[in-house]
Image 1 (cartoon, rainbow, N blue to C red):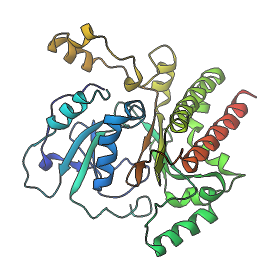
Image 2: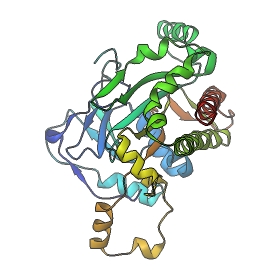
Image 3: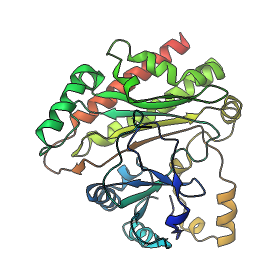
Image 4: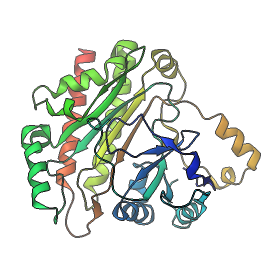
Length: 332
């Protein structure tokens, strides 16, 4: 994603109410293109280091636009600096539903992965059997271990953390407790619920094609992590697809189905095109059928010399198996 100069006025921000899971306190800019998420310094550092040292993996994350101090006086916050950082480093382009608000005035400004969809269906899958890093308070570690032992976190290295699904009239919302009821044998029912609109709204071959494409994106994240050395405790993979049946049918009928951020990098000549042409292209960006990205890096670090992150990789493999079973059901 090309970096652009933009200013954010904290006084214009509004609550982001469309998250499938996560903490309270997330905001959105007036356009809905960006989300402003309270964060720790560790998460900011992870985004910055990834952009600089691991640009291929950065393509699997939401576009990082900068940081914002929410406690600062209401004035325009210039995020041009982070765009210069990106360019210079040749980088890319309710309480049951959510956790409590993070106690910080610092926020990270990210691409809103739901922007561009008519009715975005969203699934948040929390990765790993172990959800905490070394040094975590014993009582918190014990609590997280207990949740893991009672859910698919422990048995499959992933858990449905939350989801929302368009039913034709409104969104059905599934909180964090919904995913805790499943075990390794019946979690497939949660996947069937999330992808029900896709399965019933498209022809069998089209549904299978889109499911296979989404699974391929999950595999892309796994393949990347198998080549890298990291620890990403409590990270998630977020799956979004178009929940409006008519819009989805139109997309599958010929409009480009891949996310804008997955498109081929522009040539030098294309980058140097006039500003008016760039603005026109932005206005004409096609709608998307899906997005798949890794998110939530508050407890993530790159760990050279420590080997790959089997904790997360195993979860991604098991998500792929769930997708395989669903595709077999659709095509069988």
